[in-house]
Image 1 (cartoon, helix red, strand yellow):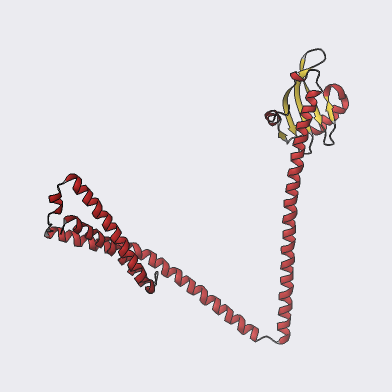
Image 2 (cartoon, helix red, strand yellow):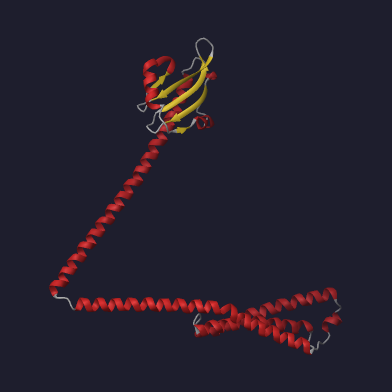
Length: 279
């Protein structure tokens, strides 16, 4: 027989023994069903044969590349040492298959034991409840049924209330977001209106635009005044939509600025307004 074929058969034997030993170990421990063993056996043989065939093809390709056809085709007589090593490898494959599969089988045993214990507890509890109900008088059974119905109604009411609260909270979040988005849009429009109101709109430079939680928009900007000087200034868009400018609205502006723009919190959107090309 050719040396390549012998080597391939050895590979087949090692792979098959490894997988089969693991399969039988798990079947013996209850991790696999004995009825499934024939199906798995056929699968193991097919996979092992496929691996051995690939090994044979690889050895043949290597032999054709590096050795002569005669050397590859020459009969091969394994030595005694070779046979001993081969038997050792096959035995090691079987042992390794058992060692690898044993923990899985042990885990399956423990899981089955836990399931059996839980099933026994449920059956015991069900039997105890059946005996308790059987010992009740008709009046006691009627009272228990009434209490059960009241609890079910209370649970349904609580669930409905929780659902209503959740839906209300979701609706409020959506409404708050829509309101906030509208405030941001109004603040951006206010910046454009403020720019157009300048003596020289081209000199308008928005330094800061903060939209406060109450919807007020606070503007800090630079622009050219009536005398041609570029000076810093401020404006505020009140929550009611009134635009007040520092140069024109005097005390009314001061009152609105102190009320709305000296508090903390808010969103700085000056860069956003510029990126969107609003001003």
